[in-house]
Image 1 (cartoon, chains in turn green, red):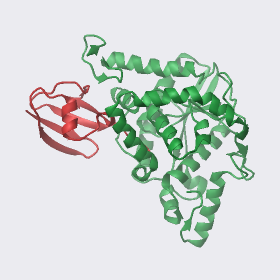
Image 2 (cartoon, rainbow over the protein chains, first blue to last red; image 1 turned 60 degrees about the horizontal axis):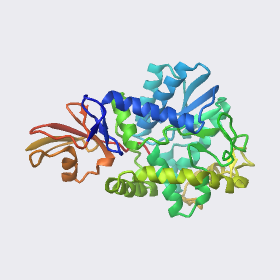
Image 3 (cartoon, helix red, strand yellow; image 1 turned 135 degrees about the horizontal axis):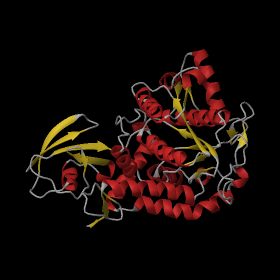
Image 4 (cartoon, rainbow over the protein chains, first blue to last red; image 1 turned 135 degrees about the vertical axis):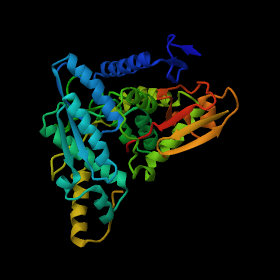
Length: 326
Length: 68
């Protein structure tokens, strides 16, 4: 066993090296900063929005980007949170988000499904026959983008980690949805393929570039960093997640990773080699604007508007309507 | 040897009997927990999977998977 120093090790990395607390924190933060540099995620001057849920990933992201912002005053930070309306879950994680932002002097903007769409997610699921993660993801991305643009953010940083990315890559493969994979990567969007860092180069002017600084950090590394920095207030999991396809892919991947350490890194590394070609291939299909709301859409009308319409109909009918989108 | 284990997500405390010189990884195997999915502490300090355990150690196991 290879130890970093004489201090007690707290984690064994995938490559086999064991690190103490001090060296793990250094290793982790350097990995995030290297990811930002390597993929040109943050320019010299930014008004960054941090998508904050109050979970370990987004709090870790905010803590590290706050360090970056404190060193460089041209990088301004604010957090944006979406309250989907999931009882006994989001209300609790949002408390952690508020508490962190107050202590660290970070402005926090909170928006809710109830205010924006007329009802919380829990109630939507009672009137629409739809997979929870489908409607939740569509509405969340819609609100994040719209509100970030209104707030003047140049980019939105999200807490997606290596595990999240590997799951998405495999889900797209399993469902033969290569077009969706073209939008993955450390910078979300398709037209970004052949450009360098700094600018919002995604075609649709209404689209706020999303970036993933934790792209190369495993979920276990993020949890370790969050624990060492007292960022974990609870160990809650969204009550809807166990029903999802993603959860099944996640569990299978974790079994594979335990048997063959390094599998997740290998998947992302090989994906990154083909990603520029994927983005190039699908660049002509970059998002249009929704004719209803002006937000990004792959068709004339965005999925959020289509769901919002169905929600209105369901509210009027007060009876379940089977979704064609799920 | 016996170790006391607190499972954070389940909010459950159990005692587990292990062979002498067992490691955290052995404990997780015994509990059928995938080591990739958890972090663990002894006396509130994180320990790696290859850490040897001692009789009556107090081990806390926390899931790394949270959120949605």
